[in-house]
Image 1 (cartoon, rainbow, N blue to C red):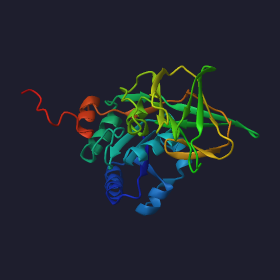
Image 2: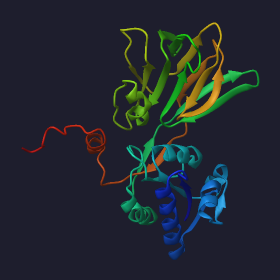
Image 3: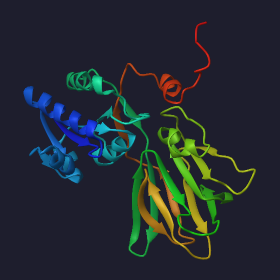
Image 4: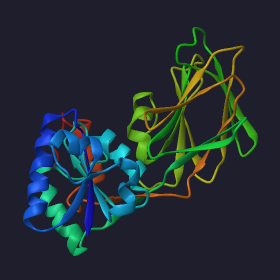
Length: 285
């Protein structure tokens, strides 16, 4: 068993936890590799480029917040990921810092279960051929620095859904429904629901609302504008600047992400805790 470890090097607490984790694994003779930047920050010689970790490692450990887990999952491919929360909200990171060692032990013993999460695939065809990008949370097309209000034209399975005048469009998985989509007014969707949500960002149309669609739909989005460049972001990372009328095709990816589950966590308890739901009501009284 060999672990690939990714640390949020911008957080001192995550670096401290990385040091403790390395010592703990060394004591037990468990093999591991840090991704290169984490290893450099921790002065650890056991390292490999993030792009190659999945070739050497059987599972991954992410030390950081949800952003670190998203970054790790992209390179983990289908390998299991143990997410340890050293961030704030922590919707995706299943384990607290105190639970880290027991989670690793349980994973090695094979007593953990995995949450299989769907991903999005965004495709853009250019002069050099099609380019494909994956996202666990969301695919976002924004107006960026464009000074006016563009129109986003959306089709489902080749049929026009609508043309939205807005600052952008978010296409999110159920996993990503508690991320950017939620902050833009989208619904919270229970994990592993077989749907996507299309959420406009600051729509300039009073009747526009988020739309939930089956995840077997093929979604096409283009920007109707006379000029400009429009950022295409996948899980918060800029992938391409789109030209007007350039079509982005979004569908369910054939590749899934496997997150190691915390049996002591309940999703709805997380919502109550993280979003402060029901604070004015004492349950059971």
